[in-house]
Image 1 (cartoon, rainbow, N blue to C red):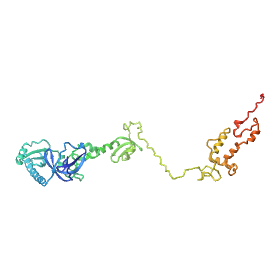
Image 2 (image 1 turned 45 degrees about the vertical axis):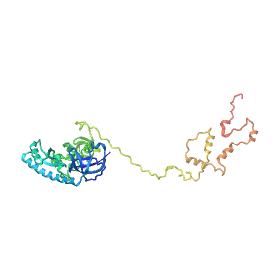
Image 3 (image 1 turned 60 degrees about the vertical axis):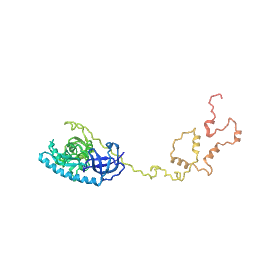
Image 4 (image 1 turned 30 degrees about the horizontal axis):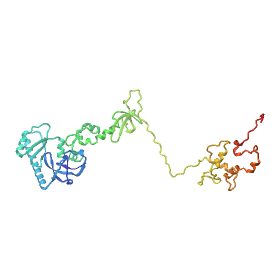
Length: 413
């Protein structure tokens, strides 16, 4: 980043960057700078600011000094001298009968050169005119031919929009403008409506050209064959900014024209098919978006359906009043003891377990299912000693393990 200030020499002229050094300047300050033409006096348009290095043309020339009272007095003398030179130059041009129009006169700050700007339709031989002007002013004379756009920029004025000329306000360089831009923007091709005061096409035609070129890519051209939701037809007119087209449908009257959005139509490739052939379907039906379901985060989950005969569970353990909470570990032992019997289903509904428990008699208080199963397993030692080994009673809990072998009939055992 480089610190610079912006300086302008003439009203509507180009802005140049200069090195402010260690000094600071404000907008409107008069400064004396060094240029290729020598010392010049200009006005500061932007104070001290930083710009990218690639935006600065090296070497960056410094500010010689802030303008003093003597410098401002010299500027006033040069302005009076320019007015005088303008009148004299017009008299000399009329005397030599030259086909040229004098536009402006510029006198250098040091007074060693006077520059005359003029316009002409072709080349002009002004050698004799230069000799006469040099004899009058006794200094170096330079005549420079400019275009009509530069003339409008120097003189200034009000455009058809009611605003001052863009070229005299902020345009530093002229961009090429063509009639194709007016066609792209659907403007009238009448020269009086699309031309500026300079007689050339208006510079503002280029401002929105890129936006129109991007819009045209998504809109069918006038006269093309398209498919719509109501049928096939030809495009009659196009509105680029609104992205809307008017289509004359097949079979409708001449005055019946329907308006569609660009999204609701599709251009048929190849144009209108020959008679007897059906056009291809290009327009794809729109997908209906599913309705968004409203979910209540605070709603309670549904525990039972309306068809279930069981009453809803209460908050305490999600059970009814008549049900008892089973002891921990009893279901595990019950399943282990039932290995030899029928297999139980993996999941038993809750209401079936409740009905089974209600049918069974209630157990005594203080006697849990766990204790009962332990008492069934305990066998007194006296009984075991009295019984013989062959007459051992099989354990009910382990029937398959302790079941005695049955004697086969006819065997010698």
